[in-house]
Image 1 (cartoon, rainbow, N blue to C red):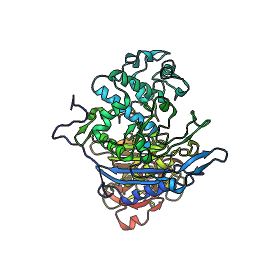
Image 2 (image 1 turned 90 degrees about the vertical axis):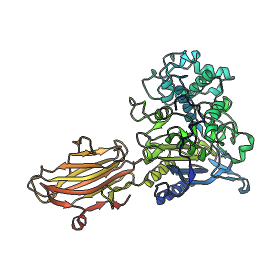
Image 3 (image 1 turned 135 degrees about the horizontal axis):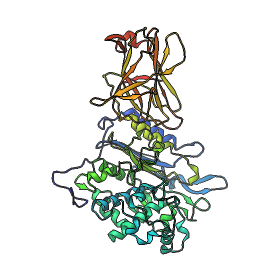
Image 4 (image 1 turned 120 degrees about the horizontal axis):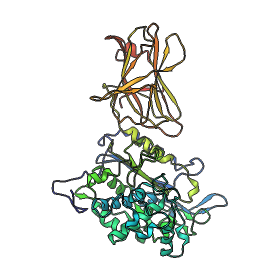
Length: 563
C-alpha cells in the first residue's frame, strides 16, 4: 500500500490477529511449551547464587495463537538492597505484588526497536534516506569527525560510537546534547560493529527534527495507537504504578545516580536525565502488546486493518546489513541470529533484542513463532544476575515445540539438544562391495562453527574413525559437496538428501556413523537422520526400514522421534 497512512488498510486487507489457544491449535508440541514454563520457574531460585529475576511474564505463540502466557514470581518483592551483606530487604508479604499476565515492564533497550520502526516509517515515506549522512538532518551532529556517519550506520551500530557516555553528569539538556555533538567515533564509521546507545539517541534527534514531533508522540501516533497497544508508552502515569514491575535500588557505585528504589519510572540513567523519553530506553510495555508487535511484523506490517509498514519495509528488519561483521548480524534496528539469547530459535532471519532490565523478544519468520520474556532481573540490584540463561532456555523450548516431520513418515533419528555432548548413530558393518553408496535424508540446525554433524567410517575389523565426504541436495538444485565430511550451522529447516561414496573400502566390511557434537553454551534445533540405506548397483546391502537392519543400529544419544 504505497502512500497509505499508518493505522488504515483497504477493505479487503486483513492482518492475522492474536488470540489465546491451545498449543495444538498453534501447531506446537504441548510438552515442550510446558517445559518452557517449568524451566523459567527454576530461575526464581539461585541462579547460581541469587535469583536471576524476581518475576517474569512469558509469552509464546505461533501463527495467530498465543499458546503460552504465564506470569511467575513477583513484580514487586524487595524494599531495598543491602550492599554490605549482599542481601535484599524483602517487603512484608502483604506489600508484595505478584507478577500478572498484564504486568508492565521497563523494556530498557527493547525501546530501540520502536525508534528503529519509526525511522523505517520515515524511510518508507521518503523523509529519511538510509545512506544519507546524519549531519544532513542534524548539522550539529557532524562535529568531531562524524560528518560521514549515515542513518544506516546508526541503525546497525556501525557508526563508531562507543557504547555509552554518562549524559546524566551534564547539568542541562543542552549540555547533554553537546556531549553527543562533540563525541568522536572510537572507530572509523563503517569499519567495525560496536553496540551503542548513542546511535539510537542520535536517531531520536533526527526523527524529532524531521517530523517536528517528540518521540513519545511519534510512538503513540504511528505505532501503539494504530495497533491498539494500550499498555505501551513512555513515562507511564502514576495510576499505572501498581501494575508495573519494580526495578533497581539505584545507588552509587553500581548506579550512575542515587535514586533509591525505582518503580514506575525509567531505570536507565541517561533516559531518566532526558526526561524519560529516549531513543535507546524508556518504553514500558506488557507481553501481550509486544506479541501484537511481533505478529504485525510477521504479517508484513499489518495487524487487523492497521498497517504500520509495507512488507518491503518490514523486510529491512530481517535482512542482514552487517555481512562484513560475522557474529554481529543486524537488520535495521533488530539483531539477527544471536544464539546467546535466542537459543535454538536463532536462524539467519530470526530477529530480536534484549533489554538490560531483563527483557527480550525473538521473532522467527521461518516458523512463524514469537517469544516474549519480560522480567525485572535488576530487582533489587543489577549485580545479582549474569548471562542470559533464562532467555536461552525459553528459546530452546519454543524451538523444540515446533515439530520436524520425518522425511519418510513415521519416525526419524533425532540427536537431541543437549549441550557439551557427543551423540553417535552407528550402522552395522556392511559387506565388502566395490561400488557401495550411502543414502539418507539429513536435517540440521546447529550453533555455527561449534555444533557439527559428521559422517565417519571405520573398517569393520576395527580401526580409527575417519571422515567420509558426502553431498547434500535439495529438489531441483545442484548437489553441494562437503569434502570434510561434516556440516554446521543452518540448513534452511528442510530435509537434504545425502549421498556418500564408499569405494575407498572395496574389499572389507566398513562401519559408518553419524556423530553430532555440541558446544558447552548453546545449541540449535538439532540434527535428524532418516531413511538410512547402503546400496551397490541397485542391490540393497542395508535398509533401516527392514526390522532386522534397524535392530542392529547402535544409537548413543540419538532417539527415534516422530517430531
